[in-house]
Amino acid sequence: MTMRTTTFDGDSNPLELVPLFQGMSPSLLGELSRRLRVVTFRAGTAVFHADDAGSMMYIIIQGAVKIFVPATDGREVVLAVHRTGDLFGEMSLLDDERRSASATTLEDTEMVSLSRQDFLEVMTRHPEASRAILDVLVKRLRQTNQSIQDAYLLDVPGRLARRLLILAREHGIEVDEGIEIGLRISQQDLASMIGASRVAVNKQLQTWRQKGVVDVRRQRVTILKPEVLERQFSLSP
Ligand code: CMP
Image (tube, rainbow, N blue to C red; front, top):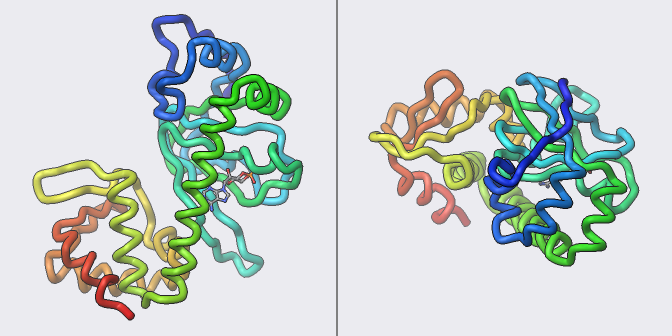
């Protein structure tokens, strides 16, 4: 990991590119800029581990970070993949508990970090910052509720279809053939996101590939027929 102090000036404040900060007052942006540090991590680097003490939260300027809970048998439960503009690591700063999950970069990633003290001070002084964090937490709770419903109600093809469409919505890039998921994501990671085995995910992707529903190349999935994926979970009980 490398770390350097931010030198944001008025014209090139990278925070303005982050949706979370768009529309926020110049005084809040200025205060954040003075307190933030830029940190860069190579792909595949642990930012922190579950159960570590939490001292920093992070906002991704460029790149992708996997949030997961490691199981004792070596498997992982992938809770989320965060990308440009997303923040993470705020929970342990808010409740003073240990890290609820591990965070590892999926790509070379540039982030800004904010210490616990600065984070709590900014939240206290700027109600708009607290509101933005609440919005993030509520969105996550909705997503978690949806995942719980899916785990109870859908079979593996249904869960995989829904997850691919969510990834396409959040990280999709329009290409001639359809929508490419703009993340290099392994079949093991996909399996860990939906509570299935890698073999089951591989088998289902092969079936959809043969039917021209998806294309998979070098860990990149392109959705060619989203309507077929949608039917996969809307027909399930
Ligand atoms: P923290 O507990 O400090 O460290 C792990 C981080 O992962 C946590 O803060 C959140 O930022 C993030 N995280 C935990 N659970 C989820 C989830 N269900 N969805 C998205 N991000 C999460």
